[in-house]
Length: 559
Image 1 (cartoon, rainbow, N blue to C red):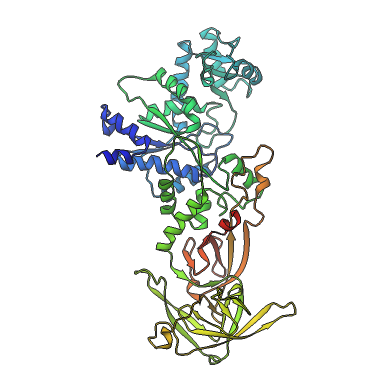
Image 2 (image 1 turned 135 degrees about the vertical axis):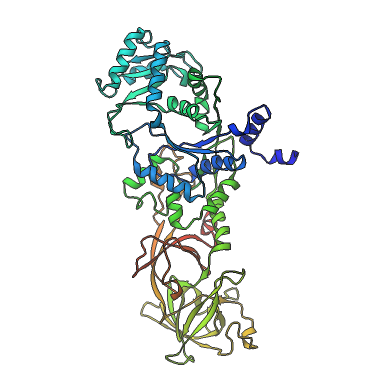
């Protein structure tokens, strides 16, 4: 039992303590509350996995609540994408809710606070209010409007609601303490005027509640037991509690806010604002560009739900901000695809090999397993003929003893096929090899059981038959930024670190078994990496995205 307690993260320990102190388990309820102002990214995945994981651990419901209080930035497109991402990750929510569901209740409670002398309308400029707020080391000063009569505040607030004032001219503020050590408690704004169309309520409202006012009250309405936020909201907890206290009825559950460190990832940015910049400025093709850290981008690149869940679990939950190395995310997808992706053959940088002693016009179909190391993958027929493609880098005219690929006078095995020996090569006017002439041992077919087939050679190459090869566009994606912390430089813009080689488009050849591949089908291209069929694929054109290489090319660059 002691070991089980040690394995709990600090949030689970808090929940266990609450249960031990009398909180009925059936009262547990969690929520994931995204703002629909952009697509979810890998940082949000940590929160999704945490909240829904707690729901699974304690058999408790989890709400999906959209924090839609800013119509200037929110769209239905983002709502739809968020729902798709959460489902794709493998989670089901109990209730789909919106902060806008509570606009009337929040307004009514705000009126109640005005009547109790705990809120007032302020018509100062934002600059004037900012000056009065003070600093962390300097106390704030009261607004000249702080002691308006209650009736006047009620009338002004109703005029705000009715659209009689311009944007920015009036706000509703909570009357707390301008000398409070926590600046969030210095008469925070509860409502502002925004004459914008809302994706759900249309033009019914022209005043919208601020996040802090909405957040705690929504948790209270939904009877959320544990409101789990990222660390930047720790300083907001006093205000969260104050707002809840104003409406709390002891017959109901009182929600508890607790915080964990947000997930930061190396070689990328996690700010929705900055990600939106990349999209709007055309630096990426969209929110689902496979170089983006968005869940939709990772999905399109070939990441699996299991790999992202495993990454979130492995990275863990922390009380302190830190940066997780993107190599851990890449390890998780390699680990998953190594167990699940069929192995096939593709040649990205081809050079032709002519097997001079193989009969002209002849072809044969070889039985090739999709995975030599695991059961249940099955096999497919791979055509073999006199002319094949191999990778250019797999041939050298001369090489040292550590080069175990094809070189003149030496042998290699072709995967699932024969042993060949390089006899000569043809070059163009620039000295580039255009053809390699080889001979083959007809008795060396893999799996044939002959003595020649058992002969050991050190190198094994992947290949594709020229006659049967299918053209494919292969998009080789790399990290979008060259710097480990692109937004961590005060003197430079994060876009200064965009990797000019983050996308290379290659005309490649793939084996014919891939002809009918569908969007999001994932494969290991043997010796090259893991690849995924892209949504741009059509009946006449195959498009693959590289998910991750087999080896980390960045490790060499960092040393």
